[in-house]
Amino acid sequence: MHVRVRRRIQRALPAPLASLGHDVWLLYLTRFLRLFAYGLLSVVLVFYLVGLGLSEVQTGLVLTLTLAGDTVVSLYLTTQADRIGRRRMLVAGALLMTAAGLVFAGTSNLALLVAAGIVGVISPSGGEVGPFLPIEQAALTHVVPAAARTEVFAWYTLAGAVGTATGALAGGVLTEALQQRHVAPLASYRTMVIVYAALGIVLACLFTRLSPASEAVAGARDGATDAVVRLFGLGVSRRVVAKLAALFALDAFGGGFVIQSFAAYWFYLRYGVQPAALGAIFFWANIFGGVSALVASRLAARFGLINTMVGTHLPSNILLILVPLMPNLPLAVTLLLVRFSISQMDVPTRQSYLMAVVRPEERSAAGGVAGVARTIGASVSPVIAGFFFARPALVNAPFFVAGALKIAYDLALYREFVSVRPPEEVAYLRGGNGERRS
Figure (cartoon, one colour):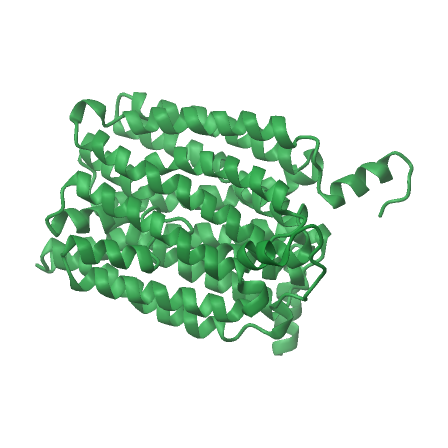
């Protein structure tokens, strides 16, 4: 009976998913739970920090230093993961989530909050931080065929989007439910922080279940000295990674002005939207973003990864600029949801592209360096956004700045990499010209 049910489920799934192994499904689960925790926290984090007595400027400072401190920890864990062990580094990252959550729940001291944010793993945006994403991407690429990589990444992105969405919804609904039971607002926000810490322990346990097949296989380290390889984990791939990392940093710098925590706070300042309603808004925003990732894999198969990345990301950033220009809440929410329905199409394509153009034994390191570059870019923006939010006349400015910077990223990415194709795209084009496909 069990075998028949499993076969029916497999037949109902898209072909690349029907034959996935234990490691892929486990990484889908950890992605969902981690992003659930991030989404849960993101809706209430600014409210919580302001409730502790921090000003908007201090809150922006905490978020900036949290993201900045994450770069050092993530850079070490990701660049050493292929050598020391991917499972070990993933477990370490999960425990750092728990440690940071417990400190945030236990103190209102600004210095301690900053220290916990720097050393631990806290996501103010609802998006990925820490060492998880690049290591999981490398593991996924290692256990699936190249032809299925982008679609597998698309479903991986969807798992994260559903996690963020349900986490945001849960954070808003549970917070309001606690307050209706006469729990003080600050205590209700702190409860979400404690749940975040508990989920870190769950993740650590799950990561121990990864099989040895997810680990890296040692390969040649041509084109770099031993010192460079040991420090950054990159050899011949370092030049292309450096270029992509710089562009990703620009994109993240722009996105940091409108991270989910601040976007939620903007809806509160502009329209008085409460946490439960904010949770619903960002639930659907993230659902739309996740579903769009599945469309991205189909577009990439037809038009190529770079064309799909730029062709979907550019109009989404124009929509971002238009959100604060809407005259009422329904129109602002509608435009935000339309923007989310295309804004995340570049995520699985970007991840797949990076994994495709670097050496197999350098994938964790490449993802780590690129991820750290994004974190550095995103870490600078919140403190500037905090100054904007502290001045009523400038509360709309983050949307304008973010949209302009992200448009600049799209144009620069297309110019630099439109001619640099992943191996499977090159093979496809050769096959289309009557030559033998590799």
